[in-house]
Length: 251
Ligand code: ADP
Ligand code: MG
Image 1 (cartoon, protein in one colour):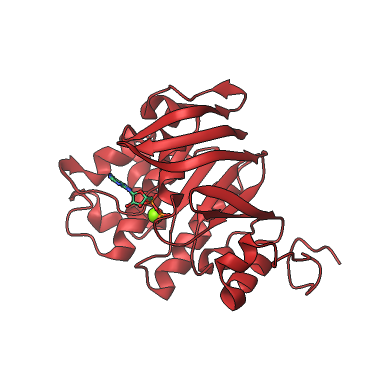
Image 2 (tube, protein in one colour):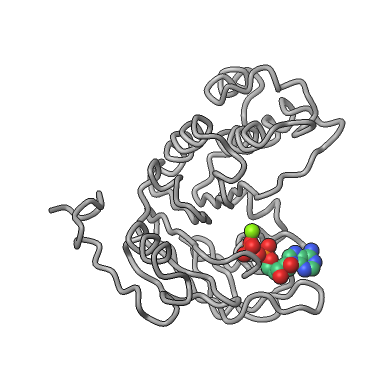
């Protein structure tokens, strides 16, 4: 579904990501952990094609097609969707119009908005004066309209209360559970993983991917106990079946 090869990325003249390799197969949900400022949002923004991220070298393939030089809107049309960390306010564009632009038919918008408890926000400008939870719900509403095959979530639970995390989690799960859909999720505390079963974990550390394993919850536990550097040093080798509380365990 998504294949990243030897990707090096800069913002201005600052190199942020170095030689990233990552592969996500159809149906897989991957989690990206890592300290602040290490380049996690940069990686998601580069996959989506935001202009401020400059690919210095390397390639990004989506469903076998080289998308490295495609503009953002073309990538969205191909089936990549993102919930960004700090969505901007777009004055003068109503949320209703935005949801239609994302792919919903005009007559579907109210029904979709109801599932996200956003029906009273449709005629306001996108994100204008929205609270933390409302911002994330508005982003997910747009993603429901788009229904992307590859869902990128950048800290979906940050600034969101417990009830809203549940709502965000259930809806994200719905999108990801579409036939062959995949996801890449950035999370610090892992709350979203209580709703969305994830299959693989990676740590982004100093701009490089490391500590790749197939047991996200166990990796998170190890990071909580010993820190990111322990994982980077190879001290978080986890067995996804060790505790048998992982839904993927099968035992
Ligand atoms: P993370 O999401 O892991 O916290 P980011 O990808 O947001 O990290 O940022 C990685 C690095 O790039 C940080 O040092 C950050 O300050 C820098 N950075 C991000 N955006 C910009 C920008 N627009 N201009 C200059 N530096 C930036
Ligand atoms: Mg970030």
